[in-house]
Length: 392
Image 1 (cartoon, rainbow, N blue to C red):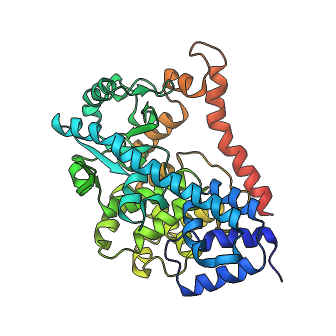
Image 2 (image 1 turned 45 degrees about the vertical axis):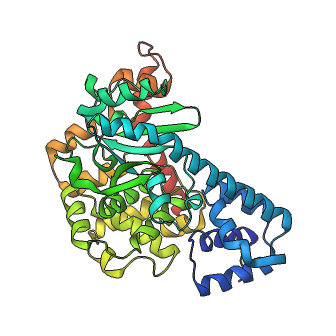
């Protein structure tokens, strides 16, 4: 049966989501181009998936198969990504120097870290903000540096871990002109009371950002975090899965270290599913022994496939946005600690009133805040019902 134009568009995006797709993939790209894509739909979907620079990268050599105006638009987007990423590094340098001079530690992760280490051209990995991990105890000093350098805190950010809020409720971000920085305090983004004794245990040698240096997550911790982050957002951008495939396929990964991180945090199921989805999109991108060593139990596998079936992820069709806490729930399932489950679930369902007020925009003393608590409880049940209906 012939593929629909929409299916061809999605397939073309998947093939172009890797900077080095391979000869077989390039041949398929040629066939899809000959079939005549809906270029406007392709560009719109590529933008939504974070793939426009990669689409340009992979369509550069196809001559008349790509209309000149389309190639011009793709090139413009690529050049903007290159300029923005370069400007971000320049604007970030003074902050990194000040943090280092103060004896503090922040660890770079995701966008800029990936653009600088796993992509052959930094423009190929667009990102909106710059993400860091930091110790909660260091946050007051880091925030003072940010404010001294002219950064403004987002109004909805909250009050901060030093004021007693659970770390998971607070990922503050600060903005200065076009530069946005965001800080995370919980281990690999998990909503868990446990955290690392030493941030140094998670880091690799520093990355040079112009004239400054910043520690980065180790490749093993970064890969685990990418799988958790993609699941937190229900795999709704192909670029997040492409990141997983790109990092997992690099040589030198310590399989035992990855297995140890997953076992200690109870994240085998979530990490395995992220690797499995990446492998289903780009066969051969995930070393077989890497995924095999993290294989979850049958019931966990069934649950993961219920929430995020491979066909739906590959088809980019009707992907439900499950709650951000899902990796934490799977972690609790693996850890089998009733005490941790009670603490984490009570925090997830009943966060501090002031945090929920700022996150929802509902006044803290308004009776409507009770509806926000109810929504946190009922929304997952509604999504599950929709998923069951769609599965029939």
